[in-house]
Length: 73
Image (cartoon, rainbow, N blue to C red; front, side, top):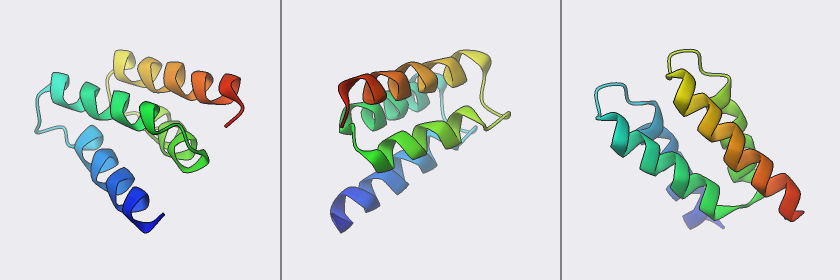
């Protein structure tokens, strides 16, 4: 569980690092979505609320959050 939490923290850090290329940040968002846990859902919702991310990135976070909710995990 702690391993997954550390991984989530690292992925969120990558997703919010505006100094990194957008494709790398997007892959981090997709990776968070693939984790599919309750914590990942909260991380995605936090990213969606980050107005420094692009509109596309924020919409992508909501897409993956919706998929987690639909899966019932």
